[in-house]
Length: 331
Image (cartoon, rainbow, N blue to C red; front, side, top):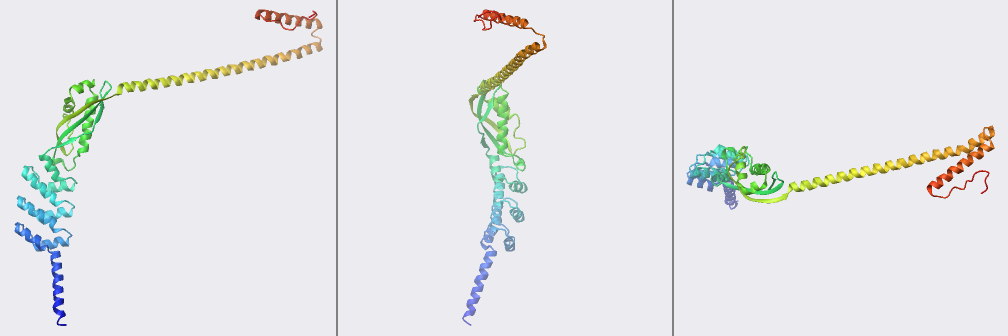
């Protein structure tokens, strides 16, 4: 038992040291003290308890202190707990201080929590960024399509980073301005001769209003001639008119055919009624014979008249007379 006592004490001491150095970042404490940053052991332990990585707070604080920034450790920890990037905020404050850009800690934290890269914004304020638009197609009043590409030089506006629109809005507004300028030109030649007409017109519209950027210049990089949209529209209209005319003609032809068929049916109906009426003639003659209203000589005279009529019709048509012969004459 006397042999195991020192071993147990050594094991307990090792466990205690492991737990101590786990909860107390002694190396970080020494670095902070050596840099002139006043950080207590209890503050570092409290960060561990609050699930805050001490190095994420102390290292930016050392950097800020060396740069001459007056930032408290509580504000850094609060920004970290809010989900912000403490190191990026401190780097942005240092860059803004060196560039002479007015930027305080609260505004930098607000920009960072808004989801924007505050360090990139500060760098863009010092070094403007060039945004290249895609090829934008516009049609002049003479029907010729022009394809233009622009380069927009912008600078970040720190005051409008929170709530301001991004690069997509700038590109969309530039495209709208190009389309409007080209569309209001009487001829595409005017735009080809003076490409700066587009940049001047677009720049004067104040397209950076409500955005997180300030437009410095708009340069037309390239202008190409595209299709003859006006001629193509005329061709399409002529083709459409042709198809409409063909459809109307087909409709009229169908109506004419239908009318012709109706007339043929009407003629056939009339012929049927005539034949029906002719079929009643022998019945009427027989009834007249029975009633004594028609004699034999009257019948013969009627047949002679019919034969003479058919003969005259045949002579007028140049054909042989019909086979009917006058009654009482030999064939």
